[in-house]
Length: 273
Image (cartoon, rainbow, N blue to C red; front, side, top):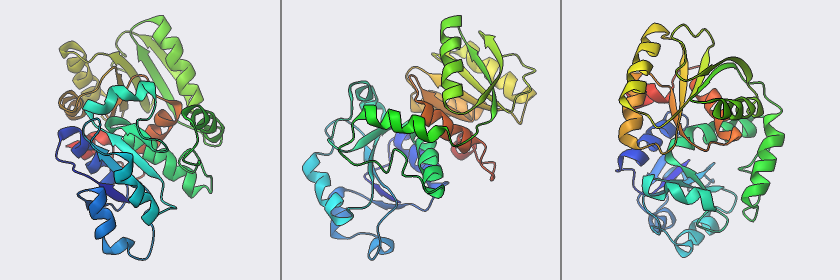
């Protein structure tokens, strides 16, 4: 894979570190550098994915990235949005033909894409650049039906959020186990827990530490309204396996199930430690 741009900021550094533990990644400082002097690994072949780091809105223009697409026309290009670019995903991708993924969702989305590729499926990453976001959602729904996810426990603050979480987990291929309103119980026996915290505060963080200490093997996936790298890093160190932003797609959640239960046992939290 090719990483284009800086990963100095805390959010993009976390994303870059996670990706580096999933695949071989080569770094270049800018789109111009990628075209002018590509890494030797890509002199004769195309990168599997071109990941363009977007630290702030407007950092790269379409004219910056077109030469990269011309250089490797078969390589899907994905923008990795940092905190300053995160809110824009609710109104659609900022650059035509380039899917933008928030930094915290990148491991899950990448795991889903790689699973599709290994299974011989095009998946959402293999769709044409002209595909709209709605088309990608529909394609993800067809793709998710091929794989069976884990048994997951669910927790959310209220019944409405919990019902939505049940539908989301099932759409991601998981079998739903215990459902809890409020905090998840400390004796949870499912291998994976999805906890919709809304906004992570000190009390929830303390409960997360107790839960992780009581169940060391439990993979805890937190859903937070607007993850920031500092709070995400604290949550990961407290025992979370991954922190995802709300709203989260079924494809992201399904890929995160794969990511946190990888054979190597490497979760997002371990990668950040």
